[in-house]
Length: 107
Image 1 (cartoon, rainbow, N blue to C red):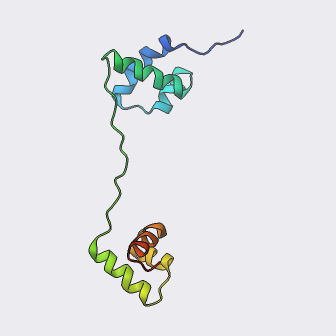
Image 2: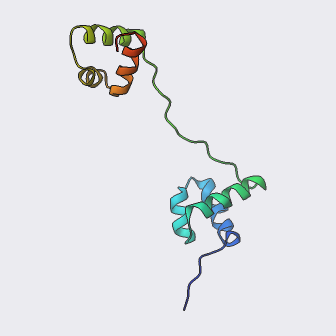
Image 3: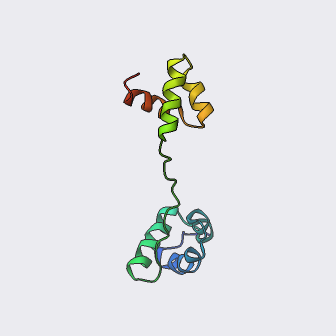
């Protein structure tokens, strides 16, 4: 007996029920027995038909570097502290510290 994957039409009902409840696309795909790309196609189709609204991404917003942090980065770097050490003390990625130093003309 060969089991075939559900079609887009068969997945639409599952997506229409679970997606608005906040179920992750990955979990919907498992329950649907299909790929995530098919679930995304179903979401797009249902959105075009006005049956669901797309959830907003919960992406993170970058934290701006404050003037106080810039002064601290400058001071610590000029006193010989390493970029990695400064980054660790400020809970910032080393790339941010490097970027600030570059903007200040110190790197």
